[in-house]
Length: 314
Image 1 (spheres, rainbow, N blue to C red):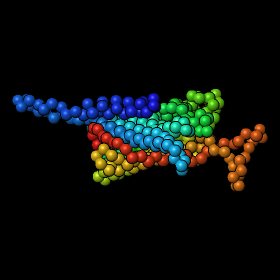
Image 2 (cartoon, helix red, strand yellow):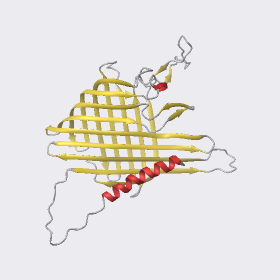
Image 3 (cartoon, helix red, strand yellow):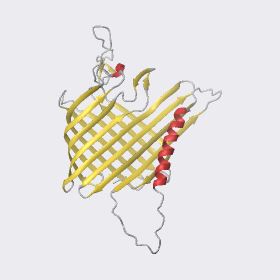
Image 4 (cartoon, rainbow, N blue to C red):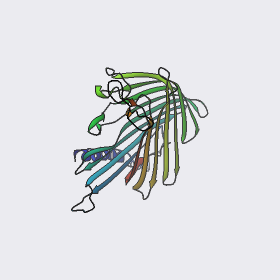
């Protein structure tokens, strides 16, 4: 119940703040001269919430009663003046399933901050600096074993390069000088995410390509954000992949069907048991399982309430 109230209060507080901020200004007096001021900032907020509940009483076919909640918040603050641009985006997502017999399980948990500063060199081409932070809020478990927590792991990166915008809703950023820090505060999880056992922060230096695109037709929107990173200091041919993809379809003004997927491949994250061709687990000389990297994929489909405030994202 505490988690449910926390999610609802978070969405309510931010939504109310934006709603108040977007309230229409009082009409000018007839005798006052209306002077249009240039607008450099654009901002907006989208909130989504989906809820489901199942209760079974003497149900012969079996099953478990449960409560499920998914919340998502996406807000942006963008600045443009002359040749300068500064785009900022915050994504927050949290979801859980509370089974009355099987306990609490987290279904979604994300905190992503993106910021991009650019100076126009020629048409559609900008010199740019790109900042990104990605982590989660709460502890995650697999078979009652903790596998993640706040800042365990957390990824912070800053890349310098160029940003190419051939179209309004397409951006291709190439940053040949990108510094990245992998932080894992929990000692027991550091080796799993590629750090040494006594290493809270690991520094990576490499090149990054980030492709952001959006297609919107009436009430149908597709958003894709693909990031590729090569570490000059450690196996540069092993490309790290982060791909966030979402599809939103508005059924009514406030009711939306949403599909979100996340794909990650990072050869430093070793979490799968190594097996032979027959599927048998391979052990090391000490009898411990050998961990190897793999493709991570998450899909979340939801039906629920959605509302947007502010300007349309540019």
